[in-house]
Amino acid sequence: MLAKFVVRVIFGALGLWVASKLVPGIYVRDTTVLIMAALLLGVVNAFVRPVVTILTLPLTILTLGLFLLIVNAAMIGLVSIFIHGFEVHGLVAGVLAAIVTGISSWIGGMVLRDDRREYRRR
Image (cartoon, rainbow, N blue to C red; front, side, top):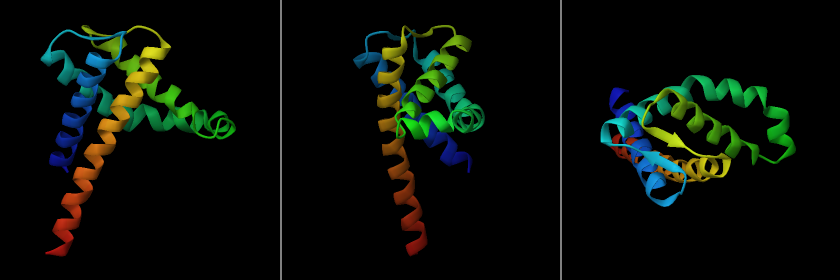
């Protein structure tokens, strides 16, 4: 279970790093800040995001799920409030960072899923 969380944090950090390189408006001061932001993003996504998702469910349904990009951008923005050295400048930068981080997390989920399949085959 801890190993799974560590792998998710690594892929989250990778996604934040790629977002900081590709998306104008995302700034990460150094590697320590990147790891701290990835850890906090994992915690925020585990505890805060489900509550916000349920509260915004009617709007999410109305927009056919596209509002979840705004929710994900808000979670990244929330992390930037608490981590000094990790900055998100604007909604567009947050949404683009959410897309990049989401793709990275999706790839990480595929890696974890493959490990599970190998374990079940044995």
